[in-house]
Image (cartoon, rainbow, N blue to C red; front, side, top):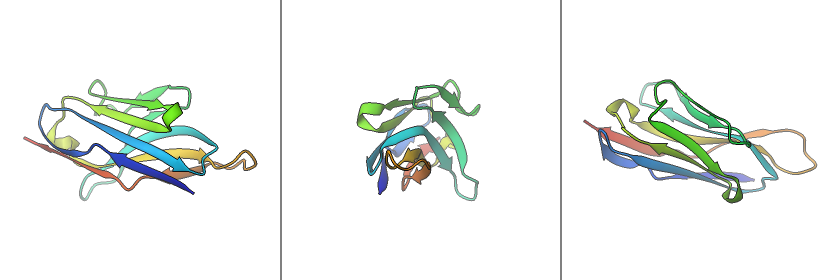
Length: 122
């Protein structure tokens, strides 16, 4: 199967920066789009940024200009560089990947990491 493992979360002061990483492993023939989501306590999970296999990106308005999503296809890894962090960015951040498991399986499956906590103090 496929496993996604996030890393890079932690506690930072407002205005600081963090870089999150998410590495995919296992049975993955091809990874299509990858994305970062976040979920704050008592809030719905929201899409932060997405990136296609070709590198086309989109960022939520709330993070545009501060966060940058990128990927290294050779490493099956997606990154989220977070600059100018604000307390409202505090959340558990999850990576997501749309995966085709094998060359003989046409269906695409969505996989999720376990999440990494980002806490921004004022």
